Length: 365
Image (cartoon, rainbow, N blue to C red; front, side, top):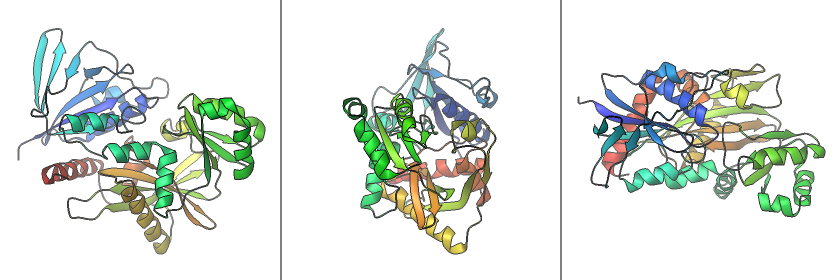
């Protein structure tokens, strides 16, 4: 079989730039060079597309020196029209072809990548890619609209109130009123950010102003959300090939013992106080129910390719926390961990994502 040419697109302008780079390192290490020609394209924090090194070690996650895409002076050029899939690069020696590409893997987290912006550009260029399209990516990125869609689909979500920066500046009282209505503790979250960036736990009303400042530093819209008491579990989702059903993994559980919540440091810097358990201890009925809810959430937003759906198991049942349409792939990320427990190796998981995306591209879906 001829080798497929895959563009690995990572970095980006969001606050999750380094997590995207770390994900790239994991994927680079897993892609079989006998099956794939890989073109690593990094996006700098300023938004320049540069030709990066095909070296997984360069993007290892290190708490003392988080990986970044540096501007090395090269510039990757996208096809000139939708009738071509040829990429070129401009460097010190002039412009040269990188060849025709079969698939883009946009492993970008946060705004300007996971939110439909890159997906829209790739659609305009008629380039097939792994993951959800414009609408599902935008919905998954925006917690307010994702929860609204879930509610419409009769899926359980935690009560919340959404405030814009203008709302807060005009009348902070609406925030305190929301806090009183929702109860304490509550969480303040940027509407369009991930990896727990900008998230604060509010235990007393006098903590709200600082939490709003932290959240609004990431986005001009934040959610104040009821704090839930219960177990925190996650399900990884894979789209089937055309005509095949969506699949859900075994559940992983986030056990928080020494922190307020599952924050950025715990997710990516291996900070103490959190244990990831996969497979999580659930009854057969509980697992079947949460897998069904995860697939329903994925399909409610029109998802494609992959997602991770996060839940709380409370005294009254399951509650969806959020959906991530491009979850992390670092060595300690829950998405690959759940599929490893479900029978895939890391390289097999990447192969499956590529195969499913190619099948849908060929099918025109």
